[in-house]
Image 1 (cartoon, rainbow, N blue to C red):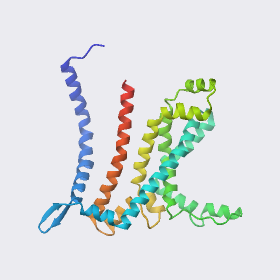
Image 2 (cartoon, rainbow, N blue to C red):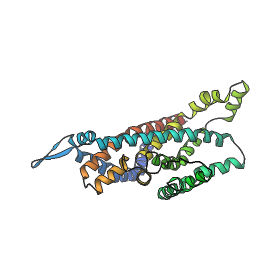
Image 3 (spheres, one colour):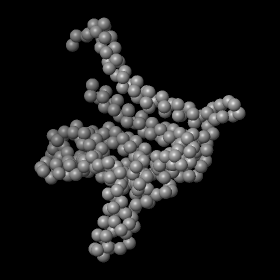
Image 4 (cartoon, rainbow, N blue to C red):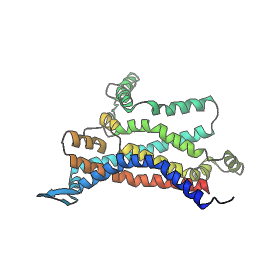
Amino acid sequence: MARLPAATRRVAALTGLLLVAPPVLIVAGLILVPAATAALSTLRIGVGDQAVFSLANYATFFSDPQSTSDLAYTVWTTLVTTALLIAACLPLALYLRFATGRLAAVVQSIAVFPLFVPAIVVCYALIRYMGPNGLLQTVLARAGISGYVSPYLTEWGPVVGLFWEGIPLTLLILLSGLGAVSTTAIEAARDVGAGSLRILFVIVIPLIKRSLLVAFALDVLSIFGAFTTPYLLGPASPEMLGVLMQRTFWQVRDTVQAQTQAVVSFAICAAVGILYVRAIARSRRGSRS
């Protein structure tokens, strides 16, 4: 294929930069600049009439038992919910990828349905269903089963709600990755005597590892920063960081400490976001080659 002239390549590159400039400027103005300003403000403390850079705000955060407990609870909720989502959605995605007929379409419609339900509606429905004297406890009592303990307002309350909310996104990402799995390769492996588990771990998993990584990263980012579900379904203590930030800002009126909590959350999410960006970059390089 003939190479384009240098002038044409420069014009094309300049056109591409001009096209992406508006969204980049919007992201920088609305997200990056305020985030950098907030991060710098947490590193600056007043000493007399001057401001000096210090890590005192972060030392206060990590030395406070309540803050560290909330951070640990946030990480625990995020990892447990993400693991449950992948464990539940991977078999479901495999079934939907290789199944045919109306039943598969019905199952997929039900699985994607939470995508269109607001979080506050989900929380209200779960409270009415799994809360004390809710529908689930009533049904179990009439069936002669006692001893039901509601997860509402416990550490498991947000896990249930966030799990229900995260099913559609996780399932759609895994289905997208499974689209690259050739049915012919599966059938050929079966012809030579490969069992289902061998096909799964030797053929399917290696082909969708990037989709698994993307699903893991997006689930972690969405769960770690959740507010509505942990606020309505979770306990008063420990709290997830999103709820802690809101309480610190509005009730305690400590804006600097709330910004410190936000920066800690951002740093953790940024580390996970790097995995997502690298997975997307590798996928694009693979599609070009």
